Image (cartoon, rainbow over all chains, first blue to last red; front, side, top):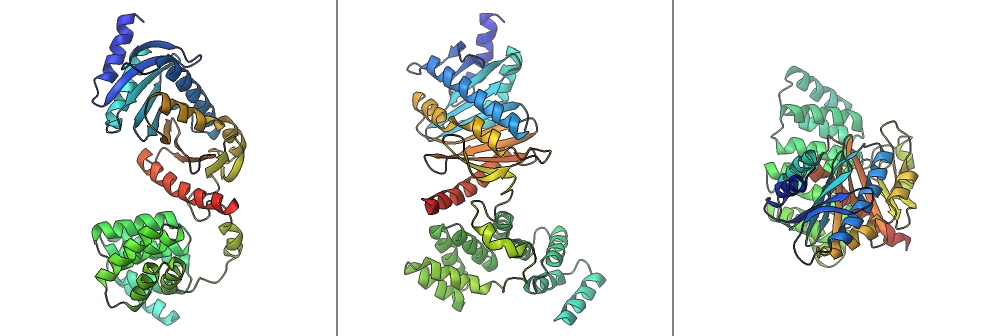
Length: 117
Length: 280
């Protein structure tokens, strides 16, 4: 996918009110593929942790018999991390404010994941 | 008493839409015939879904069957239909005492007292809880509950069950798992859709998740993490942290919405927190 295509996928996510930034992360190695993050966010470190968390969660969910992960949501006192794995092994990640519409953000993350392929 | 049950059953058979099921269900419950009471209450509730008393009856039966989570939902529903419903307020106070949430128990008792200021048991319970005697207040409230049903073989194991971390919670031995930071099972159990115990492998995979979630939240300036919910193709999971060194996993099939799963997890986390404190 072209750089423009990746940016377009991220645009789908960042236009949701309350989303502070988004990035595409390689699930296998936790490397940032593309990002639209606010200044001050350590994208590479977050990507590595998101990739690792996704891996652990995915293996646990598979062992628990609930199948592949479609969406996950880390709730925090000051916001949230929302993640949808794309079929290609890319994680679509959003960093959001506490008051974000999680349902809408989830839908846009899923659209972005489809666009990424 | 059996004649009363026969008479009420006959009345209900003649007029299935009547409210006699409330008396019949309560009578069966008081006699410890919980399965029969459950059927009567549920059938009545299906016919009268907007009747607060029907939810109250069903909740009492569920509470006697130690299904506290669903009892909570039913009493909660009764209150939504009829704010100030005495039975629901007392029932919720009873459940809040059971999970150790004295503030909520007291709030519900006081609301019940406003609804029935002359109720002697309520006066007594509120006086006790205001005086800091929560356990005595809970006992006072429990006196209202009818004597426990005769012990069945399953119920005979109740003391052992109570010693378990998630005793009384729905899915305690199949969908609730408590583990430590290094991935060792502390309590509960998890079964896959085939019925196999998968507690240990799942716990092992989740080792370190708590630390990684905490570090991610910190790096992003999001404060502390409070929960992690995930949607799978065949089910939903929710992770919570009852204490700094423990992790709670709740797993349910996809019919349970994510929001409800978070509520279940919150209750289970409270139970786990208390249990861990007792073990310390």
